Image (tube, rainbow, N blue to C red; front, side, top):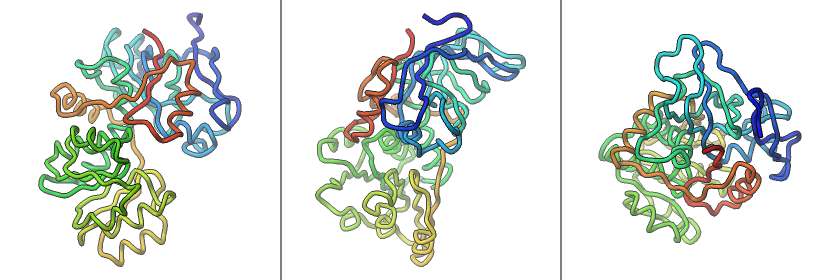
Length: 323
């Protein structure tokens, strides 16, 4: 049981496998001016979490352990700092605070600038809302802000059934695009129900052999796995845009894109409360649904990481923190 000065949190004292994650007690953060304290009801689990835990991801930003992982938060405002005008104590909010610096979402409380949060979608609970921020913002910012997708364009989404991918399919469809997704066959029916116009089984078909004249590729796999980014160049029309999310853009990839007459961008998501408000409206309006693979209690964070790293989840994994 935590006191007024401490809280439960998942900590790690070293880099390594899921077993380094431990439930412990840490100091409870207090909000500075312009910040809010949020009592966390649920925290989303993302690939960047387990990559950081193991020494990749954002571990270079966080530095040496100990640290508390997690950036996806849904909860209730429990305290406000001076100057905050956008929310009040008791408001239900969700957000992706501080990314890529430490947010410490695998804990009972977080603090961050108030404008890095938005009001939680009213039609979903905290567990489902916690699945949205990092993945939803990645999908929106890559499609809208980076690729500038417009109605009538053709969009290819790799790993379309994953956390980011299933949001990218729905947001691209909301924008009026023709959406093609890559995923294993077992997930095709679900993706079509989300709005995908075509789905390619990457296990049996080379996607570049069947997909052509695409305006934008949202690559959530990267060149580290079967040269997905490089192969994606062949699917683009002249002037098309490849957005590489997980692995960045190598000089070789940039050179190949230039020779082919297409654009290529690397990408890293940023906190954005304003866009989270827009995404909340899409969720409440029924245009976007949240794919939730499973909800586990906070103390099972290691198990959530094991499942996520296995790569068989559909949608998101979430940790339930407090009720």
